[in-house]
Length: 179
Image (cartoon, rainbow, N blue to C red; front, side, top):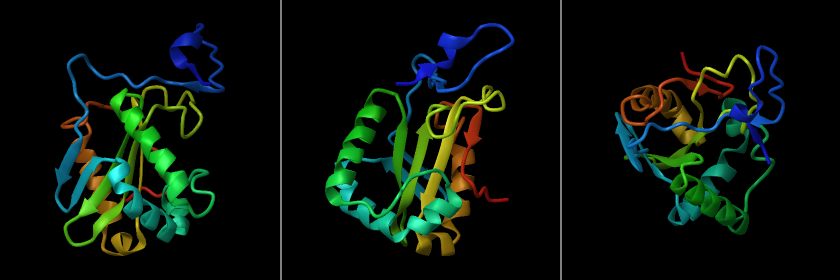
């Protein structure tokens, strides 16, 4: 269980170890379930995406590690294991704890995933990231990457965040950030 940043604020010296910064959404604001920008669309991930998600992850293991970074995935995923993850993502979205989207493109279909997490969940919370309000990461499949859709997703994110998604200070935590 993570402690929240708000629980540990004690003057100038803060121990941020193990803390998370709660996602703060303005009263009345809604995180959309569907998004579209240029060549990239996104919809809230659900169990209906199971087969495409498993195939996409398993075809992209090395590319995910290279572009997104982090410790996931540790290896190929199974239908059973990924089903549990998708149910968890659905519940997190419903409860405004985190937001996971499937990325699609008219020419390529399923192209990857987008994650909006509280700071401190994916990477440790630091003084550098305290002023950000959401940790944003994404990955795409190898054919989508070759088609320029990794960079197109970053462009879409910069359009969505603040305009459609109610966050204003994103921290893009991917290892590879397009120029």
